[in-house]
Amino acid sequence: MRLVVDLNRCQGYAQCAFLAPDVFAMHGDEGLLYDPQAEAAQRERVAQAAAACPVQAIMVDEIDLGAPGGAGAAATAPTPGASRA
Image (cartoon, rainbow, N blue to C red; front, side, top):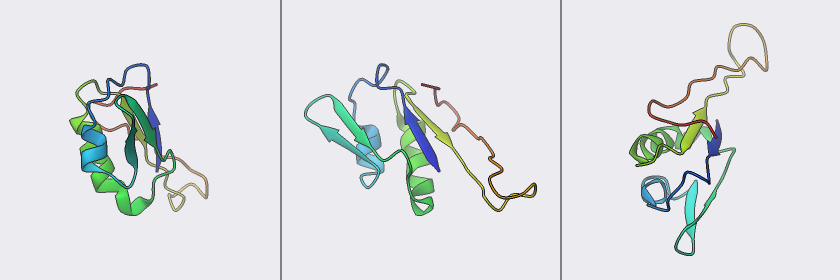
């Protein structure tokens, strides 16, 4: 799974860091750090975090290497309410 956060849109509400602390972390009062290549095991928490973002700054791309069509086929599924950076 690949994540993109529009850091210009992010306002530091930290809902993502609360819901998926293994992927998102606040640095200071307003700086967001995140793992752009989050583990598949974090999928549900990341989806919750993206949905909870008040400014819709988180976009999630699901990458399915086992998809029909061969290795490397990507299924892009932005989380509802997510924004593209």
